[in-house]
Length: 399
Image 1: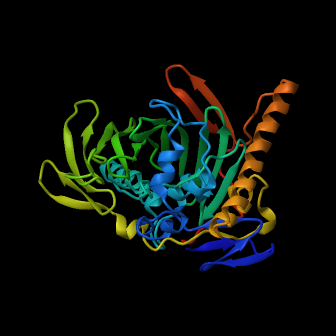
Image 2: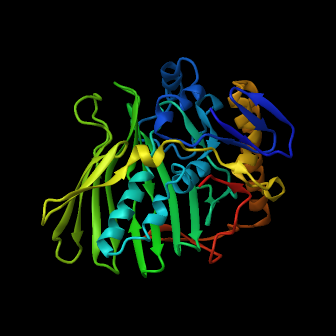
């Protein structure tokens, strides 16, 4: 366990880290955390507790507004998890910037495919991050990359991501609208919304979706990613199609983290490369014409040795920053003070409900601070940043 802190606040030692009463930042989800880090967050008798938790939930129920007790929470918000997908890679690795460095359109698409795969992280069964409150933000910089995330809607829950890198001349805009449903023996979370990666130097925009998250309670407790992902660039006329296999019902047979796919010309559907591998190890691309293979992604190189972000400017922390909003809850979870964590979490959730009632009584509608939020019947929910560039942040991640 690694915990970062804001040095301007009173601190206390917890396990191997130090916690601030103002901002609590915990270890990023990484390959090694699948076996170790997250185990520290798991409540005792987790399977029994999960069955009792969902005992009164009917199959097919939308779990969007379901509130988990702190026993089942990771000590971080979902916004922080979204941020880690963008700014947390191994020290010395910058997968996102590599997308802009390819000399040809096909090289850049292969790099974008690798970045898309890198956003999948192993999750631990039985624990989940906090549901962000309306207006919550997460703001982190890594070198010249600035990442700003905001919870722009609560019903339905929608998170918006804006990341810019002036040095590399790229921009990332994401709209995440997760709809989790309970199916008796499993939970399926569909991640609606698009990711748009703009390589401004090349005039290319790559539009992609996200795979589904599966959580199986019975017969074998497990988590996994599954479904189809399409990455399309209209400017180059190229696209990638990826299929994540996910877990089998009995948890045996195929590798639950395997993927297959292809890169092709959109207009002719002519295949150019075949993609094969596992998102938690290596992924290779084989050129159809020559049979030549190249490793396009190595998870161990990309997602090991991840360091916890640090608070560089405590005075610059916003009151809406995730690490501040949930600081007391996270601190209590890390100390396994479950009653205190529950009380602090309920206070946050009740404040959100109270603020909503007051806005309703005044006839006011919530307006996001950093994003414009739109909805159409055809496209669903979408977000666009109000500012051209995401500003430097008071929290920094190591290069």
